[in-house]
Image (tube, rainbow, N blue to C red; front, side, top):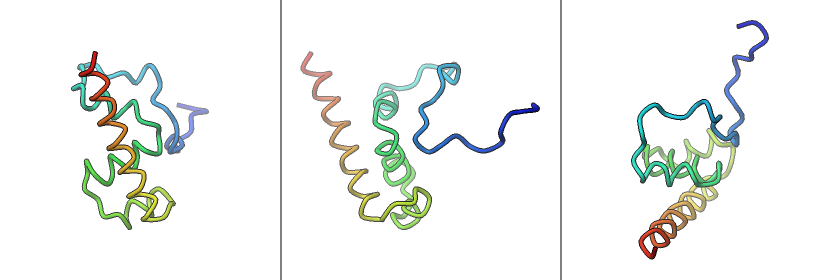
Length: 88
């Protein structure tokens, strides 16, 4: 449509409310969506998609060490989410 940009949204953009999936997502993926944008990006690329750290770093324009640190932090946050959910 006229006036709409063909550029992808910024890397730290949150999904719009109208982008909600038509089918319910598994609880594990809902947890991943609750991560901050940068942690989510690193976790999805590095862990879920098993991309090489250097490739992830190039895509995200951060160092390879930061990719791994963010993916590790994301895994810890996901574990904390599970622990909180099971404690209730």
